[in-house]
Length: 389
Image 1 (tube, one colour):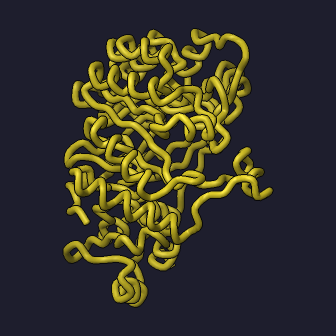
Image 2 (tube, rainbow, N blue to C red; image 1 turned 180 degrees about the vertical axis):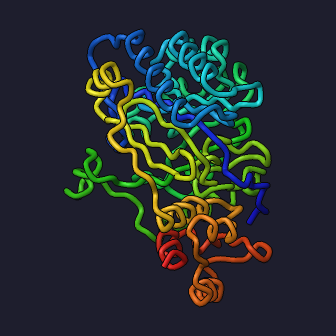
């Protein structure tokens, strides 16, 4: 496995902006996304984002922003002027400079690709494309609105427009073979600039795919074949210089997504917009925040109260420790046991750690750092539960 990179002691500070609207709902998606068959009043939504950002700025005080991430939904349905106004609002409350990573998710439809230059002018410096597959048959199965040709064109446009590019692919799809995935992955690596997000298809309850799966009308690889897909993914990406730095994310050294690292290194992040979550330090307390999920309700609530928070809860020492392990053990660089002790105010049980080391589920990186092994990644929830017990 690759060696870990440097880990900032506090995990950093990021801002997540959730745009909840999509042109269509994908059958595998359980994200907080909504389809509207009428024009969205973006000016009204921008004003609400500005108010909610101001509210969180009062809670956090002025901090240096490591990363800003526009997620969704489909943020590329936003007008470039909308993105620009939100970025101006963030810069008015916190410290943003040329080193701040500003990422945006986009769907690779031709209409949205034409907006790329507008997003770049607004300040976006990293594009993340939801490609999902490079084959038309599978794109149709996944409910995507673009075809492979459009995806390739969007990748080319993004590479020529933004300093940094990532795109997503889903594997272990129905009827997909290991040989077919290897060919597709190698094609993707040839197209990628420096980062790929590679997700194994999961069947989430409440999605159309779940109903089809329960009815026996959708067949996906079993657990053993899924493990083979995962192992192949690691082998191919490592061989081409894009090793995993997290369970599903691969990058050339130094090209890791800084915003995602804020999450996994258990930093602070403000989450604004319908359904967004956050973790922010207020005084000596780290707080979990959650925002109203339904867009129109969120909009009216922010206009009335200045924010749409439905949760603002101080986390206990036990919760802090558990979350740090849950997030940090997803990373190849692992976790710092000294930081765990500082958060949880207790040490990891030496016997449980010894058992996990003996069974090859975790490995040491120096005296005070451990990480999950490749075998440990397959049962990560169990590994975290053992360490946190």
